[in-house]
Image 1 (cartoon, rainbow, N blue to C red):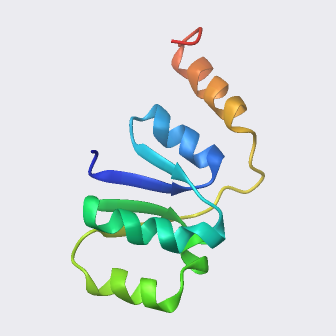
Image 2: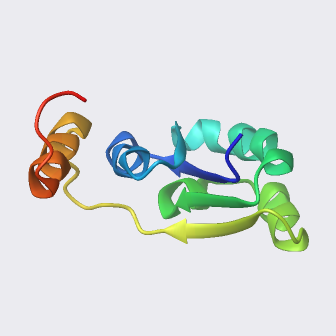
Amino acid sequence: MQEILFIGDEVTAAGFRLAGVDTRVAAPGEAAELVTAEMPQRRVILLTTELGQALPKAVMDRLQQSAEPVVVFLPDLPGRAGALDLEARVRRELGIEGDG
């Protein structure tokens, strides 16, 4: 299992997947359960601010008191495009053609 995990929206997750990072897509109501389940297994959790704001105080307190995982809050993307569009754009920019 990878030490780094991104939790957030599908568009941002697509970019992190292209970079080889393990990702989970979650809605604000699912974030607390997912973060709590992943904490013991990860050294770094990247979390969008939208999901961070949805975490209950008890979960935030636990994150702040623990040495690991390190949690980094990332700004949400304004005007999100579809995940497939983002992947196609990144592939185009990198000069990668085709599905694989």
